[in-house]
Amino acid sequence: MADTQGADDGRVVIKKYANRRLYNTASSSYVTLEHLSDMVKQGVDFVVYDAKTNEDITRTVLTQIIFEEESREGQNLLPIQFLRQLIGFYGNSMQAFLPSYLELSLATFAEQQERMRAQFASIGQGKGLGGAYEDQIRQNLAMFDRAMKMFSPFAYARPEEPAKAAPEPAAPAAAASDETLDALKRQMAEMQAQIEKLAKR
Image 1 (cartoon, one colour):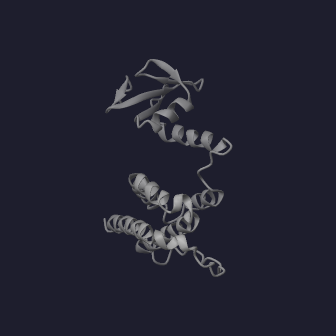
Image 2 (cartoon, helix red, strand yellow):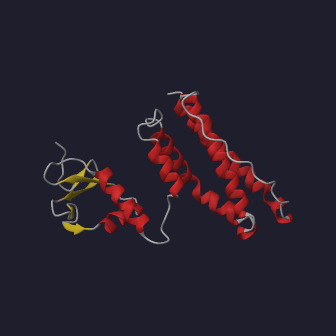
Image 3 (cartoon, one colour):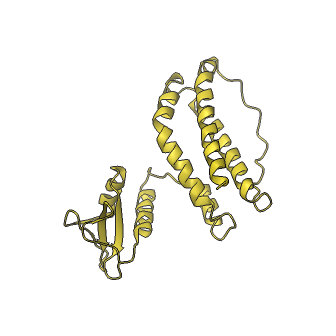
């Protein structure tokens, strides 16, 4: 049975009681989902146990935090189409692979976010950002397709995107951002290399 007195392998232990109250055993105080959300943002690792059964319910509580955040107006991080696609993977042959892919992708993004912020800021203080961002999204999707096909070349096929109108000529200022975009592409190549390495395990 896990040690639920104050800390568990260095993690703060939270107990959830039948009345839905959450108790921080490290600070000996009751907390809310908002408090736990702040702990996550501060990098404080914690584990949540059901006070009666001692079952680890950390995943459930973290999911509740996401639900609360998504319910707030203007706080949405998860697009509806993404949620639909995510639900579609439950029971799918690629379900076992998706968690590792998402974890790796988000970890890589977190590691590089400061560099990306600085690079995006250098593009005319936001000018041309939309096009550059969309280009990175397309590269991410293409990389995801390749990773999926490594595991199941026949079971996965993403619908082709509808034909798009030819893009309008880029503004003169965009030429100055070529070096920045090249740097972003190199970062995406690094992510792809990591995914391919994962696929070979």
